[in-house]
Image 1 (tube, rainbow, N blue to C red):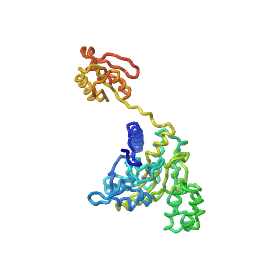
Image 2: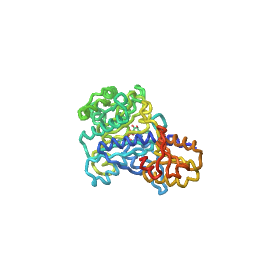
Image 3: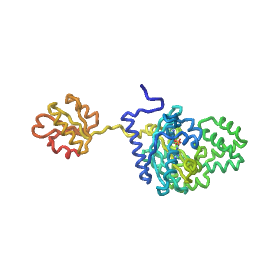
Image 4: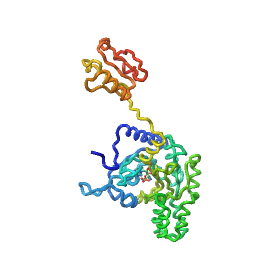
Length: 404
Ligand code: HAM
C-alpha cells in the first residue's frame, strides 16, 4: 500500500536531508536568540475559519472528532502561536523571539513544490512594533539560506508593504471594500497571463492600469527604505517588489517572500507583520511578525545546486563475531561499548565473517572489532580501522577507551 497522495515516506537518506535542514534551522534561530516552542497538530476548526483567509480554509484537512468537535490539522503555525501567546504572554518578557519546526497539512493540488504535508521553519517576534524586528527576521532568513550554501546568485528576498498598498489604493480612489479583491488579483498575477489580471482589475476598478503600474514599479516607500537601511550589507539580497501581497488575510504591514533567483520554483519562504491577529484570536493587543520557510522547495533548490550533503550513514564500531561460541562474550563487549557511548552494531544471527565485514562497510563503520577464538583466549580482540585497513590486537578491556 502506498502513502496517501501528497504525503511523504522518509526513508533514512531523505530523513537525513530533513535532519540536516532542521539542524541548520535550529542553529541559526538559536544564534539569533530565538527560543523553540511547539503546539498541537490538531486545532479547533474555527482557529482558521475566522482568521487565515479563504485560500487556506479551502485547503483545510478538517473533520468532526468522536466528541463532535469540529477540528482541523494545522495548515500553518501562526494561528497556534497567536493562541498560545494570547493565553500566556504575561509570563514572558517582551519582545518574544520564538521559533518552531511544525509539520503542516494542506489539502492542495499536488504539484512541484506543493505537497499535502510539509515542514516549516517558523520564526516570529511578538511585542515589538519597531522596524528593527522586521529587519531581524529578514536577516535570519537570509543567513539561514546562506548557511545552507546558497548565495545571492541563488535567491532573492522580495519586499513589499501592505500599508503602502492601502495608501496607494486610497490615492487612486479605490473603495476600501474593494482592496482585498484588488490585492488578490495582484497576488495571483505572476501565475496568470497579464490579460487575465487586467480583466480582473477592470471588473473591480477603473484604475486597473495604475494598480498594475504600482505593482511593477518597485520604488521603496518610506518604511521599505528604512528596512533596507537597517539590513546593511544584507540589503544586497533584497528587492522591492509590490507584486508580493501574500495570500494570508492577517498581514498588516511589511510583507516579503523569498524566491529562487531564476523564478522557476514556488516561494521558499514568506512572512510579514500581522499586528491584529493576536487580538482577533485572544483579545490581547500585541504587535507581531514572522515568517515560514518550507522544506519542500528548499530541498529541491539545494538538490538542483548540488548543495545537499551526501548520505553517509555512520557507526563507530561493527563487532564481527568470528566464532559463534563467543557470541555471549561478544555481547558483553558490545554492551560495554554502548554504555561507553559508542554506536555499535553486529550480526544478530550467525553469519560468515566476510558477510559481517560487508555489512560493516555498508553501515559506514569506522572500526571493526573482531572477536576470534585465539585472541579471546589471550583476553584480546582485533581492532581494524575500516578506512585505512590497519589492524592491531588490543586488550578487550581497553577497547572502549581505545575507540573513544
Ligand atoms: P505561507 O506562505 O503559506 O506562510 O508558507 C510559507 C512557506 O511554506 C512557503 O513559502 C512554502 O515554501 C511552504 N509551503 C506552504 N505550503 C506548502 C505546501 N503545500 N507544500 C510545500 N511547501 C509549502 C505561512 O504559512 C505563514 N504562516 C508564515 C508566517 C509565519 N507568517 C508569519 N509567521
